Image 1 (spheres, rainbow, N blue to C red):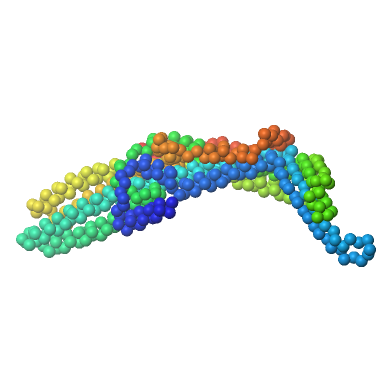
Image 2: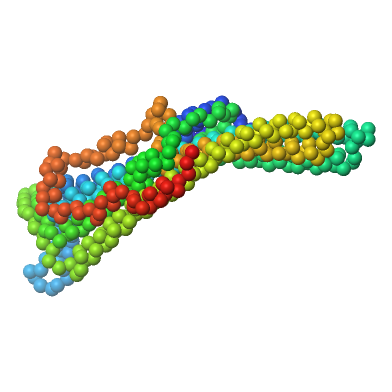
Length: 494
C-alpha cells in the first residue's frame, strides 16, 4: 500500500514538473471511470462512512433484545467498637446474574428503528451524490487534458509558422523588399508565441496532475471523448427526471421521514413502558467461604411497569424540538428542489451555449484557415503587409483554441447536467462496471445479534404507539407550478 501511494505521488510530481507521464498508459474514458470508481479516496471514504451508518440499525434493534450482566462484589469491614460481643472483622461476598428484557416501550424502539432505516437510506443517497461528483471530476479532468493537449499542439504549430515567417521576413529585409519594422513585428509575435507555448505546457501539467489526483494514475494517450449516454434533448424532460432521481432531493426526503419518526418517538416518552427482569445469585458473610455462595442462592423474577407522571417539562420540550427539526427537514426538501432546478437550468444553458460556440467555432476555423492561406499568398505578391499575415495567423490560432475549449465546455456541461439529474453513476456510464451495492452490507449486519422473537417484540412495541404523522407531503408535492413554468418558459432551446 505504501509503495502504491509513493507511486501515485511520484506520478503527480512528474506530471506537474515535466508534463510527461511516466509510465504512459493509453486509456479511454471508461477505463478512467472504472479506475476512479475502484480507487478514488473520496469515494472509498464515503463508502466506509455508509458502512458505519449501517451500524445504526444494529444499535436501534438492540433494544428488542435482552441485556445480560454478571455482578460480583466483595467487602471488608473493621469494627473498632469496644465490647466482648463485637466481632471486629466482618467481610462479605456476593455474585449474581441478571437479565432484563423490554416488552413494550410505547413505540420508542419501533420508531427508532424506522428513523435509523430512513437515515441509512439518506446516507445511500449521499453516497450516490459523492459518486456522481467524483465521476464528474473524472470527466472534467479527462476533457481538460484533451483540451490542453490540443491547445499545446496549436501553440507548437503556431510557433513553427512564426519561425518560418521570421526567416522569410529576414530574407526579404536583406534584399530590400520590406523594412526593419516588418522584421520587428515578426520577432514580437514569435516572442509572444513562445510565451503562449510555455503557458500551454504549464496548463497541461496542471490538468495532468488534477487527472492523476482524481483517477489514480497519470494520463497517457487519451482516446477521444465518447458520447455521454442519456443526455436529454429538451429541458422539460431533464427537469422531470432530476426532480425524481436527484440524490440531494431524495436524501432530503429520507431525512424528513427520519425526523417524523423521531417526533413519534418523542411522543412515546409520555407512555408507560413494560420491562421483565430476572436475577439469580447469592451472598456470603464470610469472604473466606466465597465458594459456598452456591449454597445460599436465590432466583428472582418480575416485571416493571414504568409510568411517567412528571418530568419537569423534559418530554414536552423534546417533542417541540423534534417537531421543529421535522419542520426544518420539510423546508430542506423544497430547498433541494430549488437547488436542483438551478443546477439543471445552469448546466442545460451552458450545454446549449457551448454547442452554439462549437458550431460557430468550426465555421470560424474553416474561414480563418482559408483567409490565412489567402493572406500569405497575397503577401508574397505585395498585396498584404507582414502585419496582415501575422494578424490573420493569430486569428486562426485563436479560433482553433476557442474551438478546443468549446468542445471541452459542451462535454463538461453535459456531464454536469447528467449529475444534476442523478444519472451520472458508474453503471450509467459503463454498463460493464461492477457496481458497488451499499445494501449488501446493510443486509449483512441488520440482524447481527438477533434473536427469534425480535419480530414479535417489534410488532408488540408498535401496538398503541404514537403514529408517524407526515409534517406535509413535501417530498411528493409538485414543485411550485408558477416557479417551474417560469423556469421552463425561459430555458434555452436548441
